[in-house]
Amino acid sequence: MEYKTIPFTPSLQAGKNRSEQAAAQLQEIINNYSERGWEYLRLEVLSSYVQPSSGCFGLGGKDGYNLSIQILVFSRKS
Image (cartoon, rainbow, N blue to C red; front, top):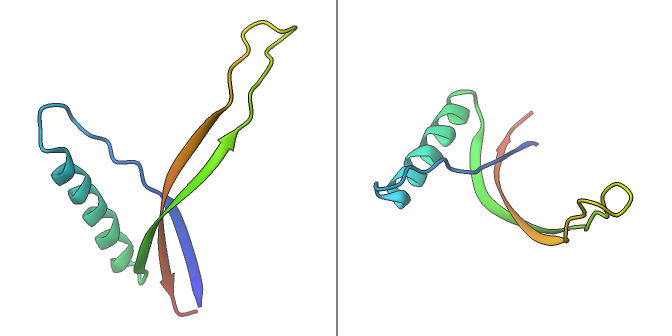
């Protein structure tokens, strides 16, 4: 079995039904990969912590923060 993962971050326009926009983008990706022999398995959410940076000589430092990334998982038989 072979697996493929790709990030999924829908690009949403203001003023329109955002859930429909996200669903349409997800459907387009699933259909595209399906045509190439990949089977959609699931959407995973990965959580991570981005370490703070001190900047150069202590200037321009940034606080650390939590980050969530959506990943689409596909599979196909090798």
